[in-house]
Length: 250
Image 1 (tube, rainbow, N blue to C red):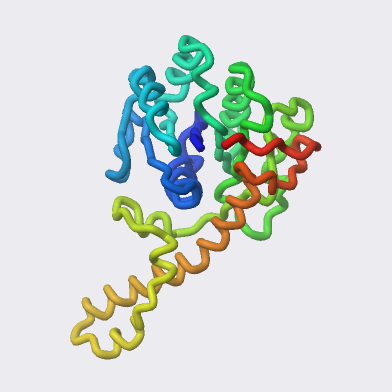
Image 2 (image 1 turned 120 degrees about the horizontal axis):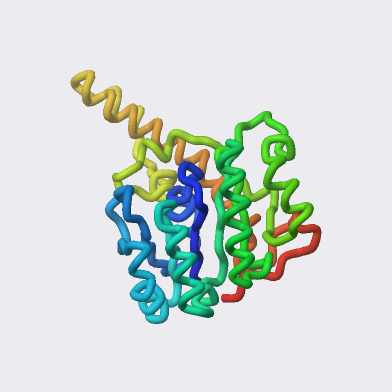
């Protein structure tokens, strides 16, 4: 399975979705970062948007990939997809993260429109609702995107495919840590803290304990979001569009 994570807008959590939602749950997937402005976390293979020819050739040699497309490369990459006619078919799905901010919702709509113009069906364009604050009305928060999709059913949106804000992503940024591994860590940090000799050592252990607790809380949320995304499983119960999505081919 080959998944592209894409949005014209920055600050929607594309890298979080690529690295922490998709990559660990697609067996054997390779991460490819297409980014020319922002440095990545030092993992995977980095390509620039203008190297799309190399990217599409490389995709033919591997079975599973998550391609994280930086906002600064999206317009160029979509133009190149039109030039390399049919190259969008190399991807099983395009995952589009969106957030509550109105500008990002507007950019999300523009992204959905451009993907649709490539000839992609709604079943191959799927939204992830990111940075969803608890206690807020979902339909009110994402009224712009949801209202658009009620009129133009060009993408698949499942309200259960959502992620909240969580400081765990900032804690592990640039450290190459896996959330599931952190959540399974059975170290008795409280016992170690009692035995620690100085404040600095206690603080370092307390930070590890807090990180594990955050990871333990966020992994089930990621699992539920991935299940709702319905990649290859037919498991998503969609409300917009109002038909059941066709599973992305594997």
